[in-house]
Image (cartoon, rainbow, N blue to C red; front, top):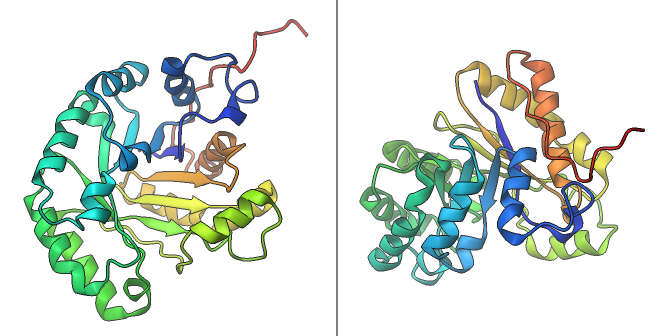
Length: 283
C-alpha cells in the first residue's frame, strides 16, 4: 500500500534554510527534497529536454521507489499537438531511460484549445507510444468536464490504452478572491475547472492547488482525504501533488496531507524523517 506525495518542483529558493539545508549545491537539492517527499512533478521537461548527464544525476539522488511524473515537451503537446512527433518523443525517451521505474508516468498535458474534436490525435498518439511507460493525460478544455458524452469518450479512450486522467483541482484557489501577489498571478494563469475525483487505473494522479493561507489549503483538501483513502483500500497506489501559489511551505503541506490520509488508513507506512534544515543542537 503506497501513497506518494510531492510538489511542483524540487528546488525553490524559499526552501533553503527553511525546510532544507543551506547552502546546498544544485546537484544535491533533489536528494534533500526526496527526503521530504516521495514524488515530484517534472515540469522542467516541458520547456527543454534535459541532458543525459542531468537525468543520470536525478537517478543518483533518488531511491528506486521515488516517482517522477514527467511532462512531455511542449514541442510534442502544444506546438505539434501530438502529430509528427516521432523524433522529439524518441529523443525524450532516450534521455529519461536512466530513471528506470522512477519515471512513474509520462504526463501528457494538453492545451486548453485541445478539444473533443482532437481526440483522434490523442488516440493515435497514445497507441503509438511504447507500453513500457504509464501515461497520465491532463485536459483543460471545459467540454470534457461539462458534457457527459465527451467525458465518457475521453474516459473510454484512456481506458483502452491503460492511461490515467490527471485530476486537477483548483477549486480552493478560486473559492474566494486572491489576497497575495502569488495568488493574483495564479488566478491569471491557472485553469478554472470543476473538481474531478475519479481513477481509471491503479495509479491515479491528483494535482491540488491550494492557497497561500495554510488553513484554507488544508480545509480545501478535506474531500480528497476520503477519496485517496478509498483508492488505497481498493489496492490503488495514488500520487498526490500539493501546490500553493507561492509554494513556500508545499513540502510540509505534502507531508501533512500524507499524515492525514494515514490517520484514515493506519496500515499506510509513514514517510521517513527528512534531512534537517540545519545542524542538530543540544537544546
